[in-house]
Image (cartoon, rainbow, N blue to C red; front, side, top):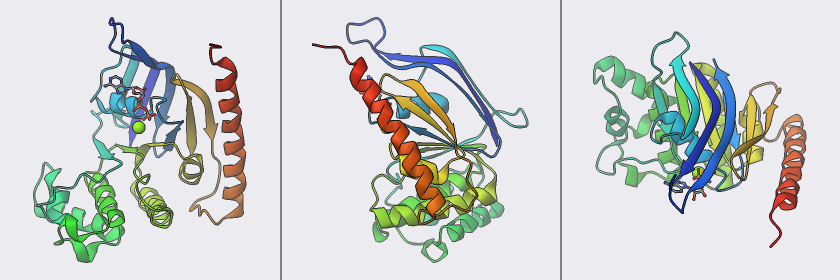
Length: 254
Ligand SMILES: Nc1ncnc2c1ncn2[C@@H]1O[C@H](COP(=O)(O)OP(=O)(O)O)[C@@H](O)[C@H]1O
Ligand SMILES: [Mg+2]
């Protein structure tokens, strides 16, 4: 598990040029322990940029960010992206092992255990081309968990899947997460998905500021068919509709 602290973080692309654009502004939050946090907001509001800054792929412009394991070591990170990013010429198991530093038997056994958790134990020797999109994404999830990260970063991992497949994967993700004690930062534009999965939802508004930081206090496991989940989903959706109104009223009048 990880301790992630973000303080007054801002990001401007193309700083000092006429194309300069601020995409994140005054972002402050802290996440620690076995928490599942979602970053939610409309397309283009800076969610992926924030995730990329957390992962170290992207530099921030100002503010502070600190990430350690909960024992104070440098945090180990795992990633799941929109696309599974599997190497087509490697088998499922060899794709899982590709991201591992250690290639020993215990690591192979762990990779197989996570494959089993996503229901793909029998597909270890298959090639990605022999799997459906949903199965490939399950390999991506198993691979990220199998590196035993302190912090798992997920960027819209289900947005390319059909609704039924995505629902199945969300249920599976909840089950694995409950067993594995990880800190997760999950990016999505889908509020309904965020309510089902998260302990907390950080809502970004266009312009890259935090609009709301909402605690989701629902028992687990949660299923989309559960009426208490559905009620809260509707409530949070309504709150975000209010954000859109806000966006409209603050738009410059041409
Ligand atoms: N490397 C980049 N250079 C310039 N602008 C970028 C770059 N990456 C993203 N942006 C812009 O930053 C804004 C936020 O992008 P992004 O973080 O991908 O949003 P989201 O993931 O919420 O859809 C968008 O307007 C996007 O065009
Ligand atoms: Mg994005």
